[in-house]
Length: 415
Ligand SMILES: Cc1ncc(COP(=O)(O)O)c(C=O)c1O
Image 1 (cartoon, rainbow, N blue to C red):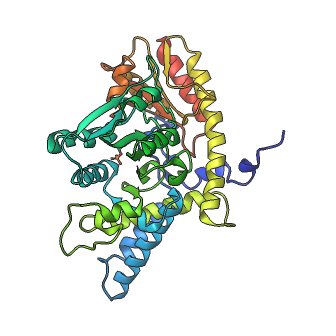
Image 2: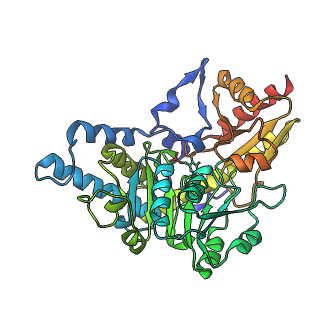
Image 3: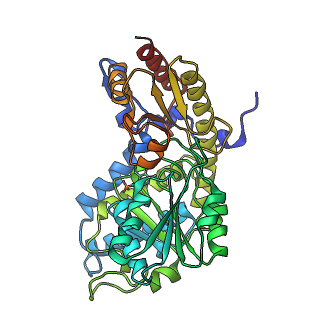
């Protein structure tokens, strides 16, 4: 059999695994299989090394003339440039912050300073509430009307025709997720963006669950703003916001008078998490390095993501088939072959989600459970009381781990 070109040129899963010390962990004598990537992935040595190196050898505040401060400026600029390559945007459009939620609240408040009472924002039932509640907060703060695009009845897919009908002359912004963190659905963001643009509305994209699985291209997606969280793609706990420069420069942002006016600094409040930002850049470098040293970083990232996508599809198909064959297991979200991430949400008849997650621990299988703040979706799926069990494949996930997950759930469902 001939391997696909993308797989040929990217590090094998076994070589990838050697970068992650966490994978040496055991639980009850078994190696741990981490399926909790959608909540936060493990971190390669290079990322931890970059964080430590910054703290131990370059630690300073910015914009002064002595060497550690100059080095700090250069290291933050290098991380901004890496994230620019990662998202397909200009480094001057990359804003760092504590996490996606905080950045989104901050942006929403700044945008609303330019909106009037009665102006409208469209959110969706599929989204994580970090892309719902910062917009809903504007109802209280500014009298903004928030409309919610529904799911197609009984599914975990957005009803895009219904979304289109919500757009009107007062719609200032459409807030949409690129992928569902609970069940993996990938949305047709370019279509949503085209609808919004034709209506004269801005588009904010939550790419937190999408960015670990597909190479973001802010222009191809049609976004005006897009946020992601590097701790979901092998980086430290931090958040990143990309925005079109002319929009960032126009924003009436809450800021201190002496703080810089230019983009992106005007959106970054106070002293940043320098070590975290340096680690974010290292996470992008790590992903690019999986495709070898040759070529520009964005090109190498494209090769890496193409290979990870192929592997993810195969792992997901195995997970879906294995779990789906177990009596009493209900799977949610689109089946293999549909546009989705390798994240599965499921329930086991007669077993609480928390119970399933706990029973998998002695088998060395770590999964998360609950509603993952995709609360409305989980309610619509009829699982408000108990939530879902969630298992996500990451770049270090093997077929053997998937088989251990499936075998564990089979035993739990039987007993
Ligand atoms: C899809 C999605 N959006 C937003 C968030 C919130 O991100 P953060 O923790 O960086 O605020 C998460 C976190 O799980 C998420 O999965």
